[in-house]
Image (cartoon, rainbow, N blue to C red):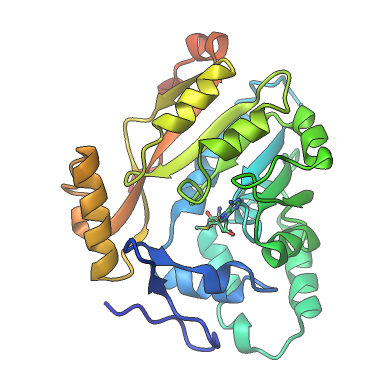
Length: 296
Ligand SMILES: C[S@@+](CC[C@H](N)C(=O)[O-])C[C@H]1O[C@@H](n2cnc3c(N)ncnc32)[C@H](O)[C@@H]1O
């Protein structure tokens, strides 16, 4: 399989970086998500859907109290896909279909955004969570807010700097931190800098590629009193972009002692799900009783 991108996406090429992992920086910060969805669909990118399925179970389980609308901080929010899938009854395939061919249909950015805003409004879930985004990609995060997928967004790189005073203040409202496709770009540094702003740490629900070690993050979360559990079953993230990326993944998995049989060896990246909660919450309801991980 070649690393080419979808037609109609000018000047964008999927590459692998010096490590061998795919580099999608060309589609992460456009003014609309047309190229993002067109290209990731071709790679059978599934992780936001699996993430939202699990996050919605956590939100609906109402561990924060009946009738309460929790506030979610989605780390590496991109164009707001987790917001779309938690605030509406849409599924990722609906979003892919909605955006099919939208990259070169002649509409202005404003027209694309207004139409998506209307579409999402028609599919809003009652009692949907408040979703705040965090990403370094300013255009993408702004798009998420403009279409109503995100209630607010912070364009900050917590790998490099401490949170702004606005983000630090907002953290007191956050009940649940989520992330899909983000670990690797963000490390324990980002989580440490978020949690240090909170008095009662929120739950942290994260999907992490099996090529990466989550332990440095769970160790930081433990310092804030959060106990981390890992789900038994991993989920598909997407297809490898090419043989270089496959070789990179196999080498990372081998170094970590992770067996790729029936998973990465079949041509896909896989992610594990981790939930971190205060000890008393974890004792009251084990992870397996709280969420069902989607079957692949
Ligand atoms: C693979 S995308 C995942 C996006 C989305 N969560 C999803 O599941 O489709 C990775 C995202 O991480 C963002 N990112 C990269 N470095 C970051 C950082 N230091 N802090 C926050 N976001 C970052 C990128 O801009 C991009 O939107």
